[in-house]
Image 1: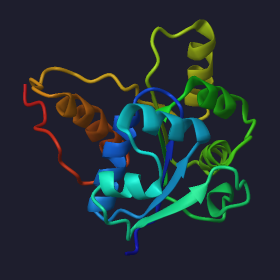
Image 2 (image 1 turned 180 degrees about the vertical axis):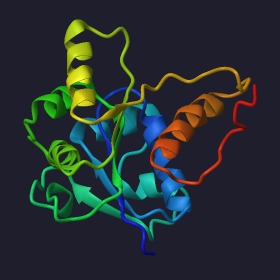
Image 3 (image 1 turned 90 degrees about the vertical axis):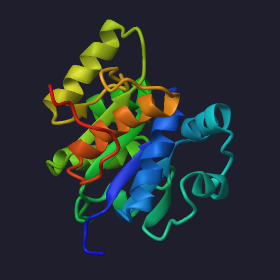
Length: 194
């Protein structure tokens, strides 16, 4: 495996199924993945998916984590905190508005926030997947600052032109857009043909 790792962070915005499905795809396609889950992200995984720990998350995402490394969000000295550790970029899915604010203002209070700061400073791809509605002016300004700094804001806003029949189809719509922006050749859905 010679591909650079993708950093995947799960934070405390509603939308845990998006993060779980994305991790499942990365793991089953053996994409090197550095996984970071915030304390609020864990609470969300429990409440929305019934996933209480790494073992349950591993089981929910196919059981093969040979390409996945887990990092403690409190360890701000771990590899993802350094620009010398090369990565293919980072996805925060879902991304809370508190995390967006920290990234927009460079506070780096956790490993997730520091890793995002590093990805931006190294001019690597940072994809933020917020799932908040409605958006306040503060949210919009922070999203604008993050975008101006180089982040891609990819809201968890599924389309309907593919005629979804299940909630999983809506999740896959958003996850497909994320993997597309990572440049991964993973096909979940039929593409729009006009």
